[in-house]
Length: 274
Picture 1 (tube, one colour):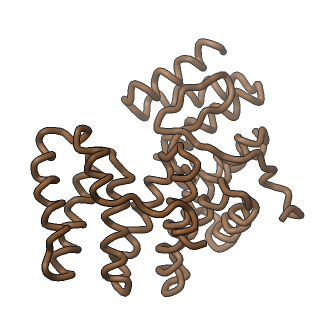
Picture 2 (cartoon, rainbow, N blue to C red; picture 1 turned 30 degrees about the vertical axis):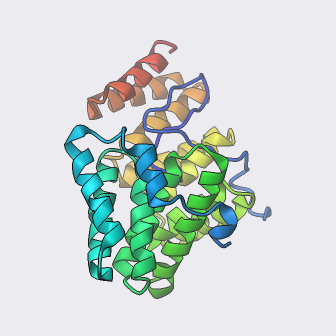
């Protein structure tokens, strides 16, 4: 999902870690049911450099410029992949996730049989997808995520963490129920799966099913009590159901779990309304 990030839900809540762009779906209705070139393609390395060279900190900019040249002129695939991996790390460290995804994708195209590289390309594409706002970029990064992570899943179907990510790329597509079905499959296989419970809870909130969201988040925090986002959303769901005592107690618990000023500010905004 545009997972593991806080969403804009009710009361004009400012997002804490990002913004989910999800369709209006009824997630508990069980009766409801590409090629990357076709979804916008990739920018060139020159375009990425031009786009982000002023965004990188001075600490990393000269190293990135040098690595970009090494990547472009590397005499062997091994050296090219090595440069791409370091570049991806630099961009990821500075929160420039589309550039990180680009270089991991380049590495995966060079070494398509290396499942570690392919998985990293898929996860980097998913992270960039989670923050993308432009519709074409969202679609392109979703397609990349599915392409790379499905290669890993073909070899190891037990990777429910990757299946959850693939599912969430469908949730924000024209076929959201495919993603919902995949999430249900994850929870059927592992009822305590952290990302599965979290994502289903957020989807229930997004579709206004706060009672169902409470069920999901109560399960989540029972099995994964340190999940601050789940604890926060449980409080918001109580609030939306007008269960004021439960909401207040839950928000106070969240305050004890984090020092993040954005989360604490959001918590306080709810407590002021109780």
